[in-house]
Structures are given as structure tokens and as C-alpha cells.
Length: 250
Image 1 (cartoon, rainbow, N blue to C red):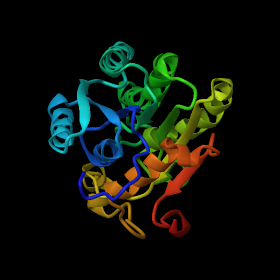
Image 2: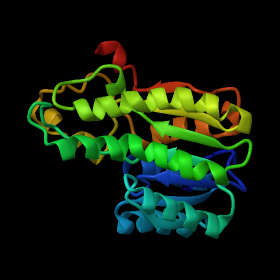
Image 3: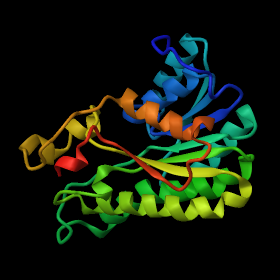
Image 4: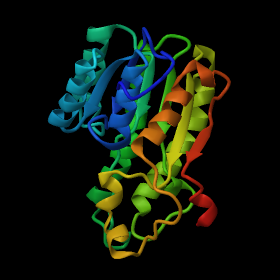
């Protein structure tokens, strides 16, 4: 946290970050805490969430770990309840948690297809439905999409479809939230130096070429924090592509 020379844009605000135990989510949680936010780090793996929380607390920040399978409505409601009990109102929700499969559509099991959709898209729905009642005017939701919503490769159709749906959800939900003065936006990363990228068998085999730059999780955290902050007060229903120019090469 001490590496940032930042404005304190999240002072007095409670921020929930899903997938906050690793990768982009972790970098976002650390930056929001560095900017004064009280961060609820939600992750399927409690030990990873707690490690992020420990790092925040070591830097004198305020954070709590929330075990959460984001594709399970009951667990999402429980995580939101814990965050509200700890900090009161919720001011920022970052929906970063996601998963991928690498099986052709004609071969994938039905349950595996819908698990991807429920984890990636269903989680955005759950945190919207159950989080908004605790979000005052001026709050913000940032959904993490992907360049796969725009240009994709074979064998990742469930992931690409869920990310495209997230962007459509973002546009529509932003209209529903206008009367509440809650902004809803998305950020679409390109290739980012995370385990999800390097564990992708398509990348390992060379079937998916990593054209262009590979970003750092911190690069995406900067974009997400901008979209979540009052600096983006006039940005709503938008998707910000943060890919180092990758889409231009695809």
C-alpha cells in the first residue's frame, strides 16, 4: 500500500471486492484501502482473502475477510450482511470474481456451462440485487468484464458469453439505478499477469496468442478505482477497455 502516491478517494467509504484474494481483485482491494477505503475482501478461498486483509491491516488500513461463493445467493447475502454489520452502508461494489472452462460447447457438461454463467454473471446479479438496498446515493458498482466479450477464441464460449452479458447487464442496470443516483460501469481487461492467464491451457498450448502488452493487476486496479470514484461521476453505463491495445490487434 505504501507504494502508491494517491488521493484518498475512498475515505469513509465501504468497498466490497469479490475475487479479492488474488489477481486483479487483490490489487483493487489493496489500492482502495491505500486510498482510505474500508475494504471487505470477498473470496471463495478464505485464506487468500485473509492474506489480503492482513496486508491491508499491516499498512494501518481497515479490512475484513468474507468467505463467499459468489455464485450462491445465500452466501452473497451472508457476505453483504457481514460487511454491513462491520461498516454500515456499502458505497462501492467491485464484481471481479470469475472462472473459465476450456471445453468445446458440444462436449461441455450442462452443469459446467451453467456454473460459469452463474459464477460470472449470476454473481453480478446477486450483488446488485442484495447490495443495492444498502447503498446510498453517490455509490458505484464496477463489473469486471473482458476483451473476450468483444473478440474471443475457441473453447471459452461460456466465459465469453458471460462477459458479454455482464456488459449488457451493466448498461441496463445503470438505467434502473439512475433514480437512486448509483452509477454502474464495467472495466474490460485484456491480458493481465494473473494465474488465470498463465493457467489457461489455450495460452499454454499457443492456441491463444498473447498479442500486445500484458498488463499488471495494478494497472487494472487503477482503472477500476477511477470508475468507482467520484472522478468518474459523469461516467455511467459504460465499459472501459483496459487492454494495452490488444483488441486493435485481434
